[in-house]
Amino acid sequence: MNKFLFKQIDNTGLVLFRAVFGLLIATEAIGALITGWVRRTLVEPPFTFNFIGFDFLQYLQGDLMYYYFALMGIFGIFVMLGYKYRFSMIAFALMWTCVYLMQKSNYNNHYYLMMLLCWIMAFLPANRWFSLDAKINPKIKNPAMPRWVLLILILQVWIVYTFASVAKFYPDWLNASMAKLLMSGKSDYWLIGDILQNNWVHWTIAYTGILFDLLIVPLMLWKRTRMLGFIISVFFHLFNSIIFQIGIFPYMSIAFALFFFSAETLQRRFLPKKELYTGDEVIVPNNKSLIVGVFSIYFLFQIGLPLRHWFFKDDVLWTEEGHRLSWRMMLRSKGGTLKVYVADKNTGEKERYDYERLLGIKQQSSVTTKPDIMWQLAQKIKKVEAAKGRDVAVYLDAKVRVNYGKYYPFTNPNVDLAAEEWHPFKHSEWILPSPEGFNKKSQKK
Image: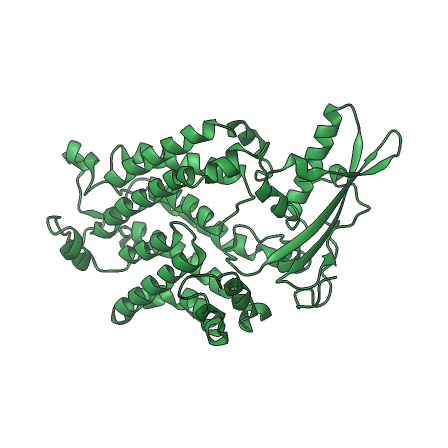
């Protein structure tokens, strides 16, 4: 075990990835400012739907976020340059984690992956070469790293892709109808819009998605298929970047190839002046037990969280319970309608409530399909009305459709959601059972 985990190997792939990763996270932060994402998501809305239990992050919301993201961009550049690397990477990881946890309206699996990679990279020796830190302090310069560094990065990538593939094994993906839905909104794309509407394209997308996610890591691990896997990966991720416009994720995924190519190849092509480590030392650190223990626990969670939806009652496609943090990417389309009523507990008077005045535009669409956000909305309404001196019950009458199917009742309209507690690992009984065939297309009522 010691030889397997702590044998020293060349670190060319790690230091190159650090530089690319730093550039990408800096681009993500600065791009969020330039495109108006920060303004729309974290400044203009009167509040955000944070992950439940992290309400204190609401204090960061507002104009402060402009400076916050600019500072993140600076830290990202420092990571790229390998300057004050450990501090810069931890600072960015902490700041991005706060951003991630303080809003769910723009939930994205790629944001989650970026958060995980930031924390992993924060504790890796990624500044020991090709960095300002190594230039300023030559004592830290080292062409090698322990093998466990490479193993945890590959394992993290493998978990993401494998769960993404397995999640696609459901009828609407297997019959290519979900791919058709995804492409239906791309018909106005220049040159390729009409091509994307062809039936053969939908079937190709559906099964390429499954096979790519399932096989790309094995292809990259085997030397004979590595270049083929890399070419497929570049095409696959560039296609996703062009069609779905999902920010830095496709380019970060292409950069994962640095973990698989040999150090000799990387050194020859990108860092010809770097010393190539060819030794076979085994250096067991004093904190060996801590390293093994921490990462064992971490990966148990990484494997367990995507499986947790099987322990909830009903179908995750309907309830959304266990959907987040599970690599269930671009699997379904959901829409909903919502009516909110409040009842004064003193007078018994019940009335329709205009909840949209409390929300930003993006929040209005999220609140119609996500049960945890519905529950948070009920809590917010109760607080708003309590500030006016009213003690109210809050009732939500929601209808949801999956993959452009028929609308079905989603919430029990007779349950006061403001009086309900939220249990993250327990089914919420106020969510109505999924109707038979709820994801089958039919005429909208």
